[in-house]
Length: 184
Image (cartoon, rainbow, N blue to C red; front, side, top):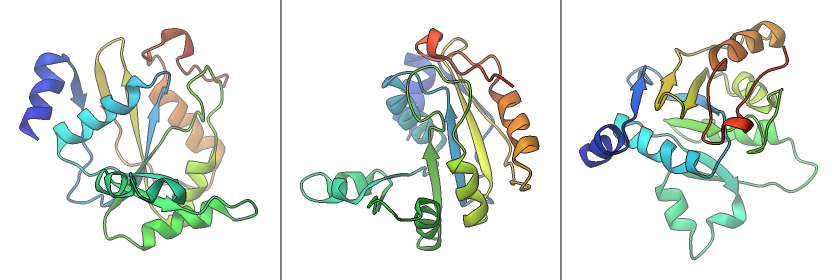
């Protein structure tokens, strides 16, 4: 952990603003925005390692078979069945039930290209799983990861998304022209 923190702060020159309150928030949805490049993946690994917090991901169950299954599980991955016709929100919420501690990282843009609206799946997963949402801004312009306080979905998606969009306002991604700029 110290090595990752040293690389994260001293070599790469990044800083984390905020934290995950790991003592109190053992289950949550972590949304990372903007997602503009493959560089976001390893920067997320550095962030979670530097902060010493477990943050996982989901993937199709086929990824968790030999030869990479053990590695993906060790990295915090959880398999889900993506067979068509299933309720993905309920399937992912069930993963939270199966773990005492699970923080799920998602990129709500759904692509690395430019978008003006976030997808809403993470919001409905949070409601179904009864977990808060923690926002993480990947600001390559300032070399900062800004971490929000937990947002407990109210059920009023318009009001909650206004808060979410405000949090990410002005954040510059690795590929600046793909940075998230909400149209609201």
